Length: 202
Image (cartoon, rainbow, N blue to C red; front, top):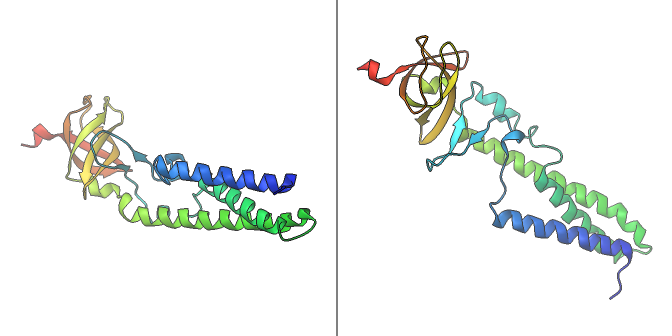
């Protein structure tokens, strides 16, 4: 069967979209990068997911769809699949084949839009358990993961509802606190935890 140049373009575009999408699933599935979203996950060798604490759960959740980039990789490959498959079917149906572009472009855009909706819904659902408020840290024991210097801010990690969370922190006294030291979160001021040494609480 002889294919025109346009039909070959449709086949190649659709093929690349399908192959890369399958490889993406096999190599880890659909995932969201921290630079795409307002809440960023951290990865550590603890076996738990780690999330940054945010003071506004509602703001993040409401903006879920908006924070899925227009040029999101998965959506681009969905456009390629929709463009290629719709265009190929149309090119085999209409003559001349150039008319197939009238159907190929909308078909690709439809697939692109559907994938963006799916990704946005997934992100919105994830915020129900991924996002914690800074007040959750108060009274909890935490580990310093980024050294706290005198009159400066570091980071501590605490566990809440089975997930490890990281929050910026400062020491209640004008001293440094080394990485790995256990502390207790006394209060939270302007989304920064004020901590004390755990040993000083006994």
